[in-house]
Length: 283
Image 1: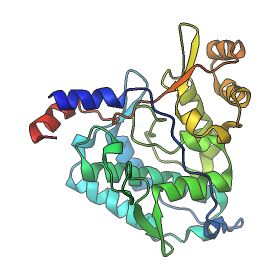
Image 2: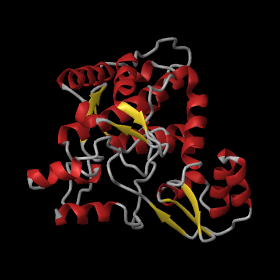
Image 3: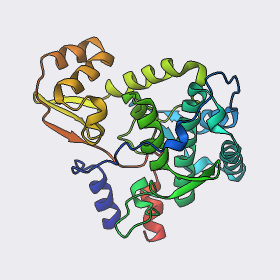
């Protein structure tokens, strides 16, 4: 039990400074068809999320991993397979963006399910390399003959093609400190609405922005991806203020210094008994 208690404590410690992957365009995925009217069916993912994601009293969405049964896993696998068969480069930009968001989040959920029960996604060290951390560097799917990892989708496709900081509120890393996984799939026809909603939901939650004894503490997400949010404290504060509720906006307007960053890597899991089950399993 002591081992699990220590592991939980480590998960909620202030996140160390770390270098995020660079935003480097994979030119192949820049291709698109502005005139395309083709749509991608995300209804299976929508049904999965509606069934298994639950908003908590603390406004953090949690996924009931323990309730995902065999037929749910099968439906998720079939959905990912259906996305892998899509000719993404023939879609218009909005369809592509929704496609990549949904694929990223579905792959993240699937990789956690394959390793479950775990305390954190960072424990799933399947990425290549001696000092790998988490699953983000491992190729998890093949699309148009190209093997893709989660890092590829986020840092070589989404970030460099769209250059929109709200991307960070749409891709979910399965941790309590990250932006919410949605209770429904991303819809290409409502992207602006969804992205703005996701930005507001995260920024106005204390896991993203909080003031403690006069000190402004931000999510480590804003440290890791500082360049995406303007590259300076001033630009970041302007970004936060643009989506902040009036009371938070007033606080931010009087702030010029960021005192620290913090991130909770614990899995956003509905089950309260995961620690007990891991202890019994000998983890």
